[in-house]
Image (tube, rainbow, N blue to C red; front, top):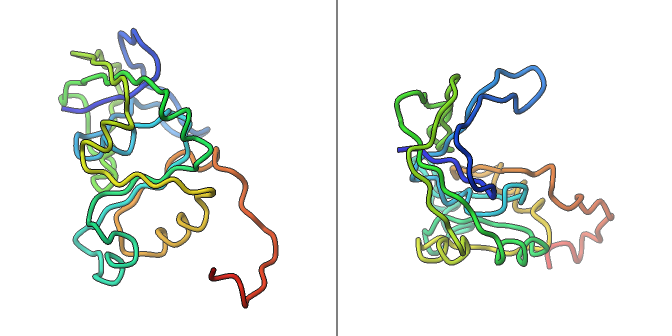
Length: 177
């Protein structure tokens, strides 16, 4: 089973659409294992990660002391997440092919009708019930860069909506505080 999460109720069919200019029109879906990465408002920037087969012990210790998957969002998005209602559309597996197993992305080139929909009244509660570590950070960029350079399995979603990078020059003597 695959899923599409939306803040919109009443979606009767998902029609292939172009995500970026020059790309193919597709219907995007997520598998059950990676559903946690989408239990936030659609436009919310986030850095999500978990340990994978190639993750080193050093990266586990640095990023995941509890071994729980992590969903990090900017603290400015907390209120919107806390008040968010999501609709989880269950999609038939037939028309989908795997695009990225590590991120759980599956795509269809044809229109897909949901077979069921349920409402998630409190996505934050569901994340916590699933044992996901939710991190609130003032800015995602330092985590983004560190995770991208690590051996973790990760997905960085809607980063175009993240607060701008802090480009203020830092004093090397205080930059690690």
